[in-house]
Image 1 (tube, rainbow, N blue to C red):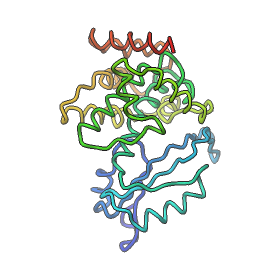
Image 2 (cartoon, one colour):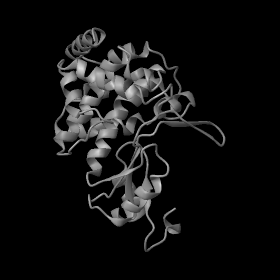
Image 3 (tube, one colour):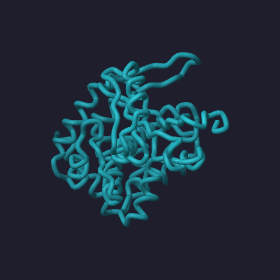
Length: 271
């Protein structure tokens, strides 16, 4: 599409999941040709021309420059997308912090939903998915912090809640925050689950897979993300989502990490 983009003011706005902005900038001709957008609306398309919206998230669009500047063009985008959200859009000078926040949330919500078939609401409240999701998200947060990224709250959930829960502390804080998030979501389907149901290649290599890659560079262990990626990749493009699949993921954990998961699961069940 680059040849058709206006040379003086044209710009690509990436609304993808994952951390793809540098890749897009390279293809588009430079970071000045790109704006990052973090989208937290829940929607899906299962019928031509019909888009379903499943959430009442009070703010679902965030725009930022790759270099962190506050520019007129991101303010213009905000004004345009104020008309599309429930509570309006916003801009940020911390695009990477917002990106990693969404990445951590996707590593939790999208992946557990795709593996189990649970709705976006159910994965936030189920005692089987919350422990696994908390471990996945904590690894993403930990890697982001190791890369000196100021990770922003995960749709209202403080990163510290995620990190503490992974260490078996403050479980009730995380469970309460997730239940509050669940009120914004109906029985919608996360994008990862939509891919599974449609028989498409999933995005796990660019979600948890990216966390693994960056974790290696930062010297941070990511055993739960590795287990999730290994299990999903072993299934191929088509598999049947089911709660029992979580046990399949757990088989890729070592004894110590499996014990941590079991202990966290017991605490979540008691909340």
